[in-house]
Image 1 (spheres, rainbow, N blue to C red):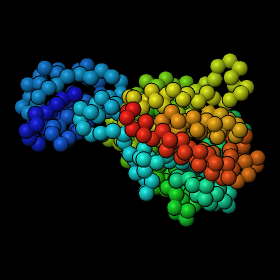
Image 2: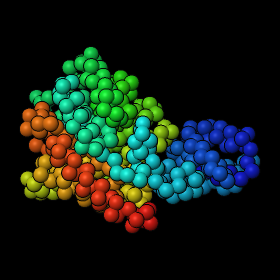
Image 3: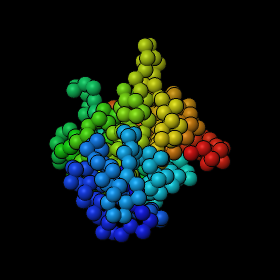
Image 4: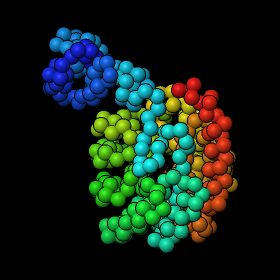
Length: 356
Ligand code: PEP
Ligand code: MN
């Protein structure tokens, strides 16, 4: 990290940036009210910090060894880029703001009629953002892969329904991208791009999605530690995109745990990550539980531990859903979840404010 003098000129800042580039690293320039701080993105071991400290306009130059510095609260405090928590604005919706945010919709988009019915239902229930899968990551090649798997034309058509439903019901929309070849297409239609748990580690995909400059809903892999998850989120910020919504969606259960829940919702990860980063964190109770009778409780628990929202799978007729039918809830059930979570968020609000 290079801290510039408060009176450093633009030329001196540009000079430091060009010196950093000579070593094959990128520079993350943060201009605060009082000083400019330049973060180094890349392998810092090659950088002769004492030489940098001697450049005109430089106050201090030192290595920072945490694997995720750009998203850390510590770095944010130094750069004054983020004071408090980051609020991501999508249309009129604020993620990480004063109110909890509810993202809801079907696991998979099955037809225009199905999507519109559910979109109307979740809107009425109080949801803020519409979800719907078009490219589904599936364990078995023999199961429904989402309409996007049928070809570009079908993918575009499903994406246009999602856009239309979002516009009709005034809900920003989010869908998952499974592979690099779909990034350009999906980015044309959606407000938020989801990177699913299975792709958390795909550096090339994350980087390509990050460059689109749209908010990213980034899910933790079910086997990833907190440090790994945050370190990979850093790849997004390294592309100058700080609009990242972190999502805890459950980690692999132990022993016979699988007989009871699909994954284990790692509730402690939420407050632990809040201490580390200013990025908003949401909970996915649906994929964690894998069963609809636990969604209410896990949702309440997620909001209680400090998540700023939820992503919940909702279907007007869950039993008939082509994917994840056992864990989807109805719009009426979503309404109860939202109402309880709002109550919990409000009750804890005054305590929460003093904790980050
Ligand atoms: C999803 O949200 O549709 C999904 C597949 O979730 P995850 O990546 O968490 O399994
Ligand atoms: Mn699903």
